[in-house]
Picture (cartoon, rainbow, N blue to C red):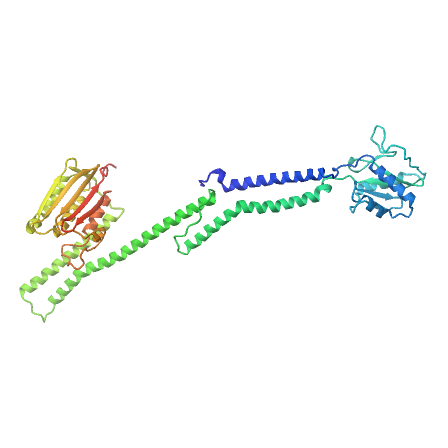
Length: 492
């Protein structure tokens, strides 16, 4: 559906333009008609009374003065550019018209009948008689009705008392009078109006459609940065905005796909490296143990077998962590939300790492602020996250250091933090510590108990609970991993 206002709609503009165009044509044509009439042109219709009488009298006089007069030329020279059109039917059968137009057949038949009814008796022209009858509007004696029911006043041409011809006026019609002029005006209006409509209505639309077409071609060629013009408020602008939103979304998805592909390639490389390390060690020691020509004492053989067993457990740990991370990032995996006491959660973490802390001489403590005694979440997953953070803190805490587990309530959120007094994390490494297999110090040999996936698993667990995790660190001051869980995470 278009969200353009109706008054800015392209359809309304086209319809309104069509109506205005028709109105302009009617107004201009009406103005042209009035101008022609005001200019002095006779109005369409029958000629004034007495016109044919005057013409007949004039021709009678001219022929009486010069019997050899070229009547056709005389009529053309005298009457072609003025007066009403007429034709003359002579008794000898000649038809002479005051214009180039052929006389209407009905008028010609009426003139012939008029002459056929005439007798051989001479008729004298009475110049003193008035050119019209007293009450019925007849023009002289013998007036008849003719073409189209109109009153056609005949004009007799009498020379020396003989009727030699008759003058018949041709009524002027509207179409015949103004048709050619109005046709030219209409053609000019149609041509001009079409050009103006194309310029004002379709010109901007065409330019914006060309822009949209060009942007579509660029997107088809792989350029997702292409954008169409969004100016205007009609359907084309709405379409352009929808197209631009689509390309922006395609661009974001393409970036996500590229990022995911890069992450997948990096993950495959990291997984291959992490799996190859224990496998290479296991293969080397197993080949050594299987060499019959190499005599190994019992202690060396036992140590080699122990290393192989340790690398096997490390390999199992990496595979388990990868499977666990895949389950956490899967949409179908679910978590069991319930009220979890923080005290029991911290107690299980401390019990798990108590021996390691005692062995390293690291103090392991916990603190729970009022109001933060309960957290809503999956008890097993939250314990797993805290176990990984505590193990990471103990791994980097020197002898005499400390690791603290703390729970607080901040603006309706439960904040769980793990603090250590280790060497800290350099600032340039902080944005990447939650990535898979990321190592702050690649040159440092990784311990057999670490898979490089612990912090990635913690991040996935926290995000499945709708929370966030962050880290802050300072050189020689230790690190603080902070988990923030929303208070309403278990209310659905």
